Image (cartoon, rainbow, N blue to C red; front, top):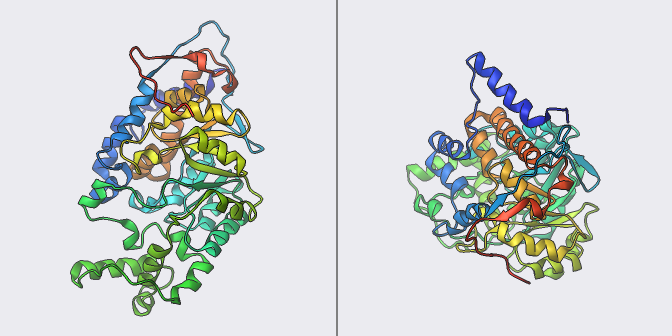
Length: 432
């Protein structure tokens, strides 16, 4: 970092551009960013990205948890030349920030995951490819050069497919596997339900599957009986055409073959394994040389079990409030998990991060690094690759400024004593 730091440089860039009549491509305020994206996106797309489980009390709780902590700045600490870098699994990163896996990014922008991959690579920020991506892992990896990338895995009902996904991630230069554990089935999401909209049924967000040789070989196998069929009308015909356009190959050939519909049906039958247990982790551990992180850990005992079963890291997350209505806020769960892990493996955090001050608070409570989700998707919707880059740059700039103004020259100096509970704030973490 230079003497002024990234935050000051980003501020200067914005203000000097203003002299030429240019404003940022995306709002810097998180609330205005979300509102601008809502106006730009379709109702179905915004519902899918912004929505949470049930009454969305967990989404609100995630944000409220950050408000229960106040930063305590220290002065005269000589904070010139700040260093926000961290090391994760042998890779030095410019900041303790990753881009979280978010599925079905084509609902936000036609360039989808590729636009995010390019923005992440330009900034040196790791992008965690989603199992539910709109573009194959190989295409995204090609867009990133040698920039850091990870792969997020949903454990399907087909172990051979799990093995294939992991092998593809290794070949594409991914540096870690993130196994998501809190979405073995979809939570009750009223925004999507009220619109009767599930993107996967329209062939969206299944590019990792339709590009996978193991999945494609399974398309001819018999499927379990369906619970119901859609009536044939103009709407379902449009859906079939859309499936044919998204599926690999020529549209007319896809319409004749029926492969796109077969792929959707096979995906629904394959998507996730509800019977997954701790002992199953040995299968994954034996099939990859990469670090394996378990995402969705909220209880200290689960963190201890993760270590016992060979996890190389955990991610404290409630899936952004999308799975269980009334769940504990992820930030409230973080200190208990950090204590249970006791420095043996990295503890990452997501769910509720909206700006750089949030990053600072999560690190002060023990996180090694954080994952940013919804905000970069809003940037993608507003301005594609440029929008993603600006959102990430703004978060990093605010983090750098918060770190310096709090009297920290490096991430190592961000500690619990830089926070104080807000007046009247209740404790929220399980004691393990």
